[in-house]
Image 1 (tube, one colour):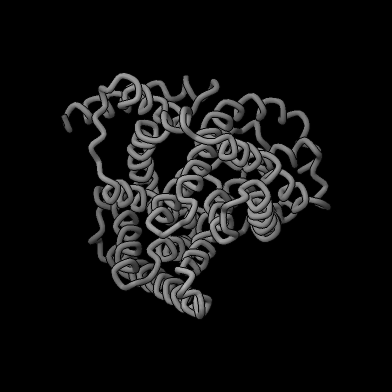
Image 2: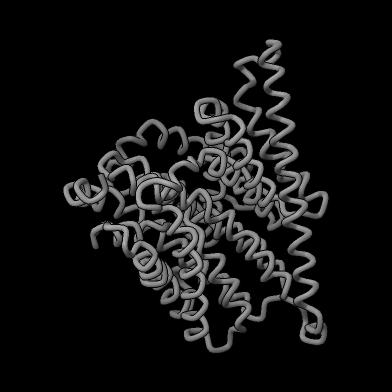
Length: 403
């Protein structure tokens, strides 16, 4: 049966890769297609795809995928853009993201009567990061003005890394009631420990690898055949070493990526990161197929209306209003602000955060799980189908307002 799974998934991967340009110029994208593929061939529909992967294996696969994505996005982020284009990325990260977290928490407190405030805050944090892969239809579309593309690209590349320490702090507060005294101190200790170890590992490995790379290239020991694997090995080492030492592997991957990108410079990092992107996308395909096969069918049948209402609000007003407020005074048109607000797709980071959070003793674990899955499902469908049509409508409006 494992070989049948591999035949089905690799066959569909080959099929989609050959026709990707045709598909993605329409109303679909890779994550949407692979999620639907998993749903249709999974146990809920045809039963051809036999899902025998256990929770720990799925979590490890998802964590490695996110680590690669975090490292690559952070390394590719052009930090010079943060000082350009009316400070769009800075506003989205420093004003829009905190407002989005606050709005998600307050709305969850109102909607979910029985959910503790801490679990509502965790839910809002899991759904705050945007997915760079799901946003590629916009960030790689030449019809979208460069300031908008770069703003969304930098935001999606950095906001998941920013949300990791917030999530770690909130999870550190999840203690039984009888142990609640001193919980904040314990949480802060764990928070600082995970951040500190993760950050030090990321910086140390990035610096040492960049130094070694400089000398191996000078001596001619580095050859093109193995060059694409250097950054992949570094990303995975950052993640695994930090986890082993008791820190946050995600922080290590994120910091390591940022520092590596800075040390390599723009031209060199583009050459070295090609392999990382390919490996990350390949792993993410498995995550999306498993997500479609195991979660989507349950979402469509069994989830409560509150989960769907929060999901709808999370993708619209809870994201779009904070973005609108954060972009006030930049001179952008209303249509452009709405466009930037809408294209905050939720995907891989939210799935991985959920796989981590469900290991903790949540009082409303089922509702939290349902809400995250519902939001990701809606996002994959809605953002995938709206990217190209709205980008085409945006083109004539923004050129004169952003140049």
